[in-house]
Image (tube, rainbow, N blue to C red):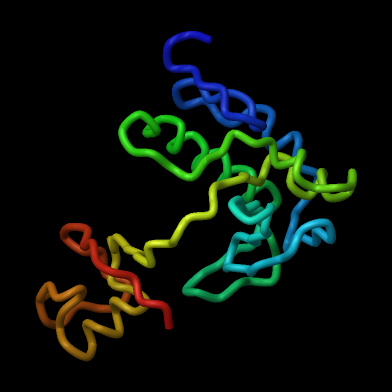
Length: 184
């Protein structure tokens, strides 16, 4: 591989800004919700389904859900789970020398039992170490929308930062604001 190329396990190659090549081709249509009878389901998030792989590993299956303002919309986006997984895998690999992460290098297809289950995890899943979560979420706001808009109406601030009076919903902010994300 040349400089700037990186093989992403199970997904293909990224080269500079070129798109994902084989990951999307490996995915067999949209996945709204996984169904893996061979592993215990621990939970479902807005986008990821989490399964136990023994006592010390998890299988994260990234679905094609579309979530907006904490609502899961009814129509999945084909390939979204593969793209999100490839992006996460890319950055974990790229930053692994700076900070350790939960990746195991285990092929997700090796931890499920059937061909049907392998098709569900192919190109959209990671096997990770089971760690204690650090429950922090952050949001970067470029527009006055959602809970930021509600905060502004109530207090004139977003994330504790005072904004000028008279702004309208969905106004572009002069500078992005970073702050904690609150689930409704």
